[in-house]
Amino acid sequence: MSPASAMTARIRRKNSITDQSTLVRWQERVEQYRDQQARQGQPLWDRDKGAYDRWVDGNDYHRLVLPYLIRNLNAGDRVLEIGPGTGVFTIPLADAGADLIGLEPSRNMRRNLKAKLRKRQLSNVEILPEKVEDSLDLIQEWGPYQHTLASFSLYNVREIERVLETLLVC
Image 1 (cartoon, helix red, strand yellow):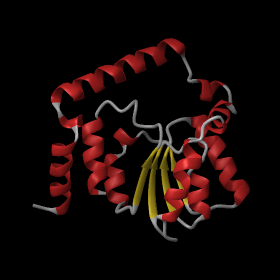
Image 2: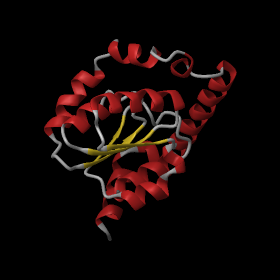
Image 3: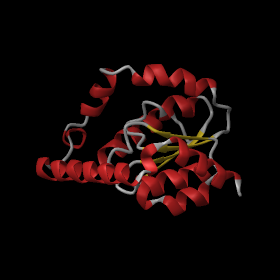
């Protein structure tokens, strides 16, 4: 058994995400979320350029998590970031010397992040207009990664099991 297969088997034993009823509930919630979003139109952060940054500033999750990430990062590490948003993790990790690939489907988030990267003259970040579930072949092709980060970005992934299994082997 390969190391990746063994890790997947351990995770299947430990976590209920692979339990069929849990997957069905997850998929139902994703569909409910997508229906809600369709009724509301564009998400707030796509309608209001600064809405996401204001939301981030009002939370402390990044201030709690970022020191741990930086402490466990080596210059030159490859990082896959799923949903980098406007760069709350991307920019500090790039400043610390990581090479990042970000998958960000929101046009306004990408535009905002790219402007911040240009302003800081950071060239070790590539931002792609992709959803993670549509990019699994690219993710595998570009791997391996020393770190994979998904912050507030997997809640809308219908095929979560397939995505997580792919990420485990990268």
